[in-house]
Length: 422
Length: 163
Image (cartoon, rainbow over all chains, first blue to last red; front, top):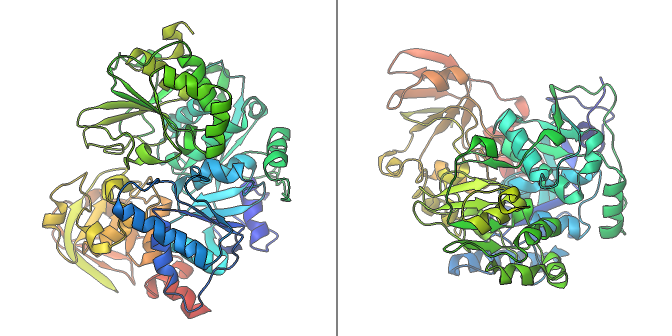
C-alpha cells in the first residue's frame, strides 16, 4: 500500500522506509514552536529533565504573540519567563515585540518552515505550514518541552481524507470560504486524528495566503494536519522567504489509501459564515436572516495576511464603518503592517473609521484588544466561535472571510460585498 | 493511580478547551488558580461541587480547540480522577497522557452513564463500572507505548526513565 504525503514525511523523519496508519513512531523534529501562553508551562517542565538545555538553539521558535504587548502584569511575567529562557539558551528565533508577528504568519514569512519539514508547535494552529508541504501539527506544552530537550516527538501515523479541489472560485470567495464550507460539510470532528490532504486542479487557483488559511483551520475539523502539494507557487514563496533553506518535496503515492475522498467545486461556493458556537455551523447568505452586529475583527493567524488586508481595503476604500460599529484591523506581522502602510491600506482603514493595531492574537481568544460585552455580536476573520471565545459568555462570534467582514463593517449587519454594490 | 472512583459530572459533545479554561485566565500557569476556574463557562457551579476523585463523562470530541495544556492541568488540579468520553480531540488526548491525567475512550459508557452516578474505573483492565446502575463497560486499552508514559505518570518522567 502506498503512502500519503503526510505519511511519507513522517516515515522520512522516523528513519523508516514505510509507515502505516495507526503505527506509533518516534521522529526527528525540524522545528519546535511555542508562544507566550504555552511556553511558560513548557519551560517549567524543562526543569524536570535530567539533562538540561535544548537540543538545537536554531530549531526552536519562541513567539510572544497572544497577550503582547503585555496586557497585564501576569502576562508581562509570562513574557519575561519566555524572554529569559530564550536568552539563557541562546535561542536564535526569539521574536521580541517590535520584530514579531502572529506565529503562524511570522514563521513562513521568516523562512523557518519549508516543504518536507516536520514541525510541532504548542499552539493548535501549527497545522498552518502544511500550505508549504510541511507536516506540522499542534501539541501541548509538555510535548513542546520534550521536543525542545530531545528534538524528537512521538506520533501515531494518521490516516487521511483527500479533498479534490476543482473549479475556479468567484471574486469574493476565498480560502476562508473553502475551509468553512468543508468544516460545515464534515463537522468539527470530521477529520479527528486524520490528515486533510488538499489536492486537485484547483489548488493552482488558490493563492499562498488562501492555502495558509485553509491549512490553518484543519484543526477546526479535528484534523491532525492539513497539507497541500508543493507547486510552482509554493516553490517561489520558499525561494523568496527561505533562500538559505533546502526543502524536500513529497508526493502522495498513486495507490495511497484515503479513508474518504471529497470533490469540492470551488466555482459553486458562495461567501460562507460560521454561526455561533461551532465552526461547523456554516451557512451561505441564502440561508440566513439579517443579523445586526456590534464589532468586526479583521486579522489573526487565519486571515491577517497582506492579501486579506488588500481585500478588506478594496471594500472599505471610500466607504465608512457603520455608525455605532467598531472595526478592528490587525496586520499579522510587522512586515505585513509595513507593507500595508506602503500600499496605503492603513490609510484606507483609518479613513474608514477602523482601528489598526500592532500584531497580536488579542481578540481572537478573548485576550484583549476587542473583548465583547454581554449580548454583543462580532463578525470575525478568526478561527473559533466557541462560547465566550471573544468575551462575555453570551456574546456571539460569526466567522467569515475578510470580504464579508469588511462589507459587514460598512452595513452594520452580516453582509456580503454584493450588498454594497461590489 | 491504578483506579478511580467518584461521582459523575456529565457534559455533551464538543466541550472545547475555551470553556474548560477560558483564555482570560491564561495569564497564569498555577494549577490551583487554573483549577478555580475549571469549566466556568459551561458550568459555573462545577468547581463548587466537584470533590477529589470525581469523574467527568462527556460525549464526542472532548477537549477540542486550543492546544492549551492548562485545560487538562485545570481538570487534574480540580481533583478529577478520570475523564471518560465517546472520543477526545487529539491534542487534549496527548496532553492528558503527557501530564498523567487518566482518560478513557468508551462510547457506550459515555452515552449511558448519567450525571451523579457513582462510577469506578480500573485502569489496568479498562473496565468501567457504574455502581449506581450496576452496568459495566470495557474502555479502550492504551497501546503499550502510551501505557508506559501513563505508568511513569507523564512524558517527562518517561523520558528521564528511558534515557
